[in-house]
Length: 202
Picture: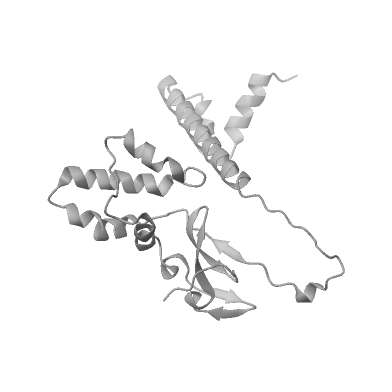
């Protein structure tokens, strides 16, 4: 009867998870095994944190479908709107060119603006209201007193061409800017297809 330790050793040696076999490698030095064990632990914790963040994000925007009249023909139901949001709320290269370049001669202020932009990128619904208090308690951040935050996010967000290469609808290729529209959402500015509340872009 194999012990738990034997099973664990065999699993680690034959696992396809990169680095796991080095944790129990007999020829590896103790410090090498410890290093690999720490790296695996850090990777596992990072994955769990990201999974929790994803679950929390989607739990705030659950989808409910209600059939009002089961006899209503499906052919008359509009195709649902599809909204796509980039995980990158702002593009750093754009921020560097449009915003941070104004403060090249003021390195301290430039650093504060840079930190503030990073903060804006990570603040998502339902935490938008926390931005002023977050800035208040963090001396490394600055308030965009002379900037309209919505306009700033619009300037720095990825464009349609930067997010999409080609769009297809019913097997036909389209220029994405012809069928996608700007959409304000709880996740920030996104792009929507077939939405009745999206905004046309000039």
